[in-house]
Length: 117
Length: 114
Image (tube, rainbow over all chains, first blue to last red; front, side):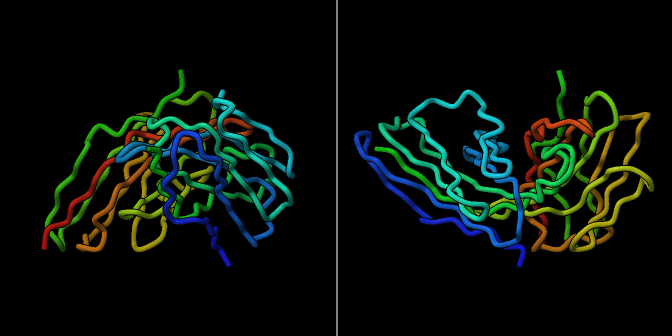
């Protein structure tokens, strides 16, 4: 099973709402990633978790709060977002067992398309 | 600064013709190089990867890529394009042996006409 699942597929939220994005993988991977992607642009890395610990935070605003409850699950909690945060949010995972997670093949989920009004 | 360049925003090719999507990189040390494809409203899908060894890497769906160290290039190729190959293609690189983030190119939209 090489599938990464993400829920919900679509999300519309107001600037005062609190919502969460969920990502799950059952490949035994120990590294998980959150990316933000604007239309027809490359993904921008937000966070990396390695063995359930946050290893990379790309200076993401605190209105985005990641959480890795276990090795299969990754959440992204959203609060007080801005309209410019509207984007496709992609989750990815990789084995996490090599010397550098960046050099591993990443498997991406289909994404959550977020619209902030 | 490390970077990946995809000089063409869009590549148009007729079905059945060979296709090439270009990528050059500027990464210190020995790079790991990737190609990913993104179909509309989907996540990225891994196509192939170069680590070391044979300069010609074969990947999924009949795609291959050639690593050229002297030209710092990693062009994606396919001998015969299909309409279903139409998608957004991203080249990516990372310095080998380090815990660094993947550096993506800007993407190339491949349009295959029937």
